[in-house]
View 1: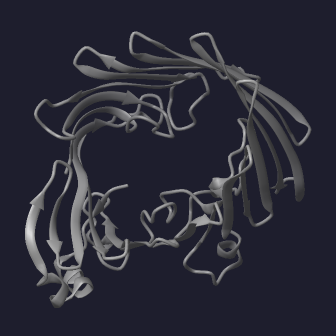
View 2 (view 1 turned 30 degrees about the vertical axis):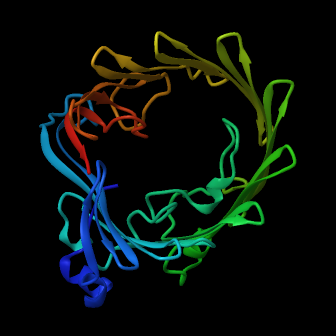
Length: 359
């Protein structure tokens, strides 16, 4: 998510003259710049990039032109004595000034609870992150909780509620039924040797339990998901086993969703410093990924045989690219890539050259 610091006027209003005047000594570090205060600290951090991108062709024969653009992610974190902190940020999409101020995201972290409210990128939610129900960990081919995921404008989390993480999220405008239906809850924790996750949104709910068994990790999941087509809830169940197998890791799963049986299998290993994984499933969706150091660059190749709806490609989604970490810098990289993956797991869609910075 692209973000930029609030305007100077907004920051002054938030911090106050007394707080600003308490600055003692500027301190620089490799990843951030901050000033110490008598009883508080202000830390500036973020990243930025400039890039040249040639977009994908949405239809065969379409003419596309390259675009030069830049993104900014700049935060200010104010920390007071007692481990309380507030981070303020606002999104800029292509330099849209209206994103500053009224659409700012404010995230407050305390020893007891965390709260994030905003429309751009509130921690764990706010349209660009996870819903609380995403704490529920399902298994491949299961539907997941909520038909419109990752749409929250507020997110409240209790990270240590008697050894559990408990969260709730939802829309800021609760005046409509559709918005109320996007309210979600989630939890995860450990009881004995069992790791438990659960989540719910509107008419959807699910729970999973995993444990170690004879050197393998076994997970079982079950969910009740509302089907708009059938106008009723349908049942989902699944089991997944992850186990070491020589120098490889093997993962197999089997699920039943609304009476339809599915399966999947994948392996992963390390070869000469490169992480290699491959998998297939009952949908004949074949995947292959290799990533790791290749000479002076980090190499990524991610192939999935599923047909992408957003491109004119015949069948597969492919992401491929190299990233060069500039020597003598902290977080400065130059990358060249191609991607037609709608999820943009590794790179932006299109053919792209990008220089990125962290500070």
